[in-house]
Image 1 (cartoon, rainbow, N blue to C red):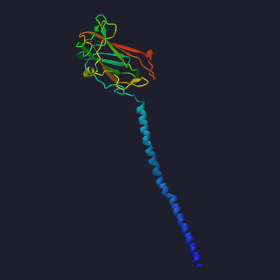
Image 2: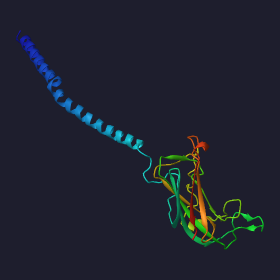
Image 3: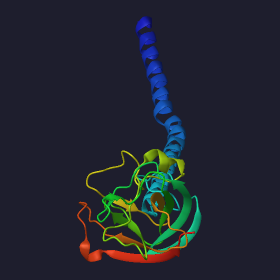
Image 4: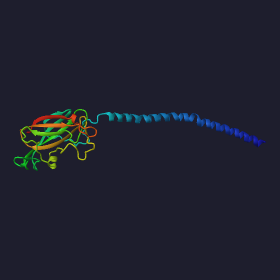
Length: 242
């Protein structure tokens, strides 16, 4: 009979030990560790929320701040300024860069003489156009801000003649065009943001002391690249080739 009583006693004692262990594991210990875990999680989640807010603010901010558009050649601004004017909110600054001998004949022929208007060795002048948007962003087509020059006494119906020589143009430190190689996109929409600038140069016959007029045209485009002729803008400025 003694062994039976001992076994019963041990069973009761074991039950008491297990009961204490269960209270210890399921009570105070988890309560002490769970609260800090929640606080750490809340702090960790708060940081990305701030980052997302900053990112949203950056996206909502103007796309430019004196920078160049992603489609443009690097800005070049050599020469002496001879004219400045506006086309809507867009400013065009014109600089006389250099006078050099023509390395090739021009693109036009004098209809009376049947000879090139520009012959090899004739003096030609390079000018540089620096275009800056001082207003709201504007979507341009592939012609960008289309600018042409014309001497006041230019005798021909067509525009001024020029020489096409990429190496000669590069040597003058001006861009051959405002758009960078490989920047063509479809649809043909090229946004010129607020304070953004691009530049390009051209050449024509050199006539020292001649008054000259520069004319620029802007025809904005819609999201599909279609020209908005009703919103066409024009502007002009004058100067003198020295």
